[in-house]
Figure 1 (cartoon, helix red, strand yellow):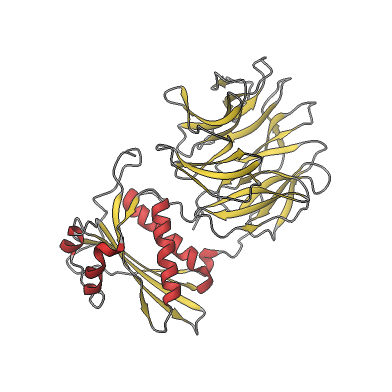
Figure 2: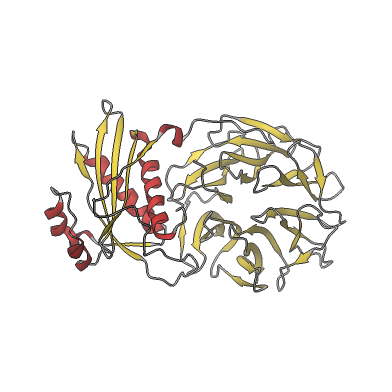
Length: 447
């Protein structure tokens, strides 16, 4: 197995206590308003978020900031539509000094769900406690109670975690507020790896290699990033933890050691080596021994694993047209077994990314004089354009819930990252430096 280190992190610092806050007439019941993730046409849940009730010393500033973070998280999840505060202002005032919830009145003002929160500072001002209560105004019941105790510098992470709990109550699947995006940012001396939260905050630099780095890829447990670095004057395969403090060289052969992709079981890494006169796809196994997957005189590159680990999609110009296309092969037998081409209708296709649900592959495709993101449906055996319009869109990466894709958009010599919802096409800009490249969306962090 590749080296893993138990590094201190959020979940070692954050103490989570589940409150048994249910009224005596109710029990912990699963929500009756769960939304099927495949039914994207369902309306968003209208949600009321009241002002955080501050306990103890005056910390209204932190409470207001926490509410703002929570509201943004739930809006960005695309599952909720927050109710405007003036609509329920009087009702909120009436209930502020009471532990009772007037479900009928909340429903009448338009709220389907309701969140009430208490905030207090502890441990001589260094710690904080947030107590959240989630109510279903339609079905007149209490849904969820959580209390989080943490240091004050973990306010944003604490809110992200509760936002994901709210999404899970609705959908049965974890939200993505806690996820991060790794990407390359152009610096004077090369390209360095940065991390940024899903909501566009908490930008931080991970590497200080002062050279060209390429193709960051997450480990399935979200603790490590593997990438190619020229720091030792050769394109070597490097593994680094998300703090940037632990680093090791995984593979170093003369020539290219590039385009890494971790297997879902975290026991293998697919990568591209140039040891065979041209680029071929290999597997680096748990003993760090190499297994060759492709044997073709044309270039093979950009491997991506299916979620079950049985298949690998990759880019190759083996079609004989001199233009790269997307293919799928067995992850054990490689191209010595059946190889299936899935991209057609374009002279250039690259950067395949397999969806977490396993039924789609996103990739970069030349459309006219620009590049756009296409999505291939493995069940329907056809592809469609995800992105359109101005600029070139490249290098797709899926969110762990399979509902969003992040990509690099090049426009007027500026490269920024955009997140787009797969079913509606709605997009938002994530970075604004003009130098963002090779985005890689993290998996869910394992608790």
